[in-house]
Length: 110
Length: 142
Image 1 (cartoon, rainbow over the protein chains, first blue to last red):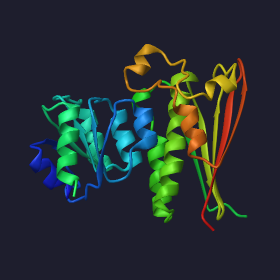
Image 2 (image 1 turned 45 degrees about the vertical axis):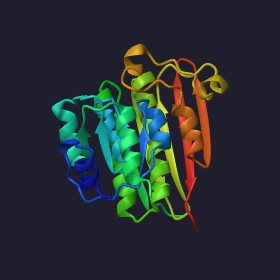
Image 3 (image 1 turned 120 degrees about the vertical axis):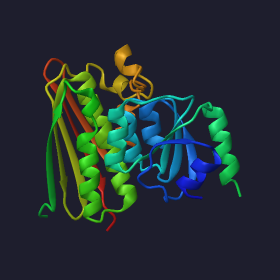
Image 4 (image 1 turned 90 degrees about the vertical axis):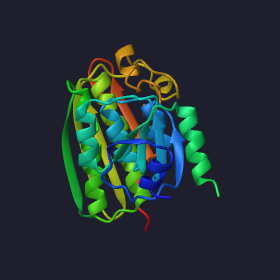
């Protein structure tokens, strides 16, 4: 499943999607950036409520397929700009982290 | 062994929002050199944690990354307050980061443990009042 297909299925609002055709291989949920940094894997959809600029750095370094900001968390424009620069797919959703993770799991589970 | 790569960065201690710039640049350079993705990931994570630590605790510092055909070596040096109890600082979950840093999603006490976990060798030298120097090495597959 691609990022674009996942976004459509979960009705995510795109903030920027420079690489919509990236495959999503799994999911990860977490707000402690150091924790996420050490454990999220390349290709996963990362669900978080954090919106500061370091989210873009962690997403770039872990090489996650996309970041989904839960509960309508809104980043500053500089974060969206950084995400565009780094080729990070960034979405927002009114759903909470639990519901989003359940949705990702439902879509990806064979 | 001749060096195939040397990157130097001055880590700005005043600007928390730009922390991670050096790590992202290292990641790009290693990717261009055809480094295996898992190696790039380990180097990037270790470097990022070090960079963040220098910004949070030491008012910035210097980072150097060297690569030859066998090893990637990361040198981090700051002139911050130093670490009084290194064994305690290495424990997962121990942190002296202030609340404003915690609210940004850091200060979980994972920085130094992550640096150790993701590198093959890590050496930490610190003198209270003078600063901290960290050397990390990651071996390349032969």
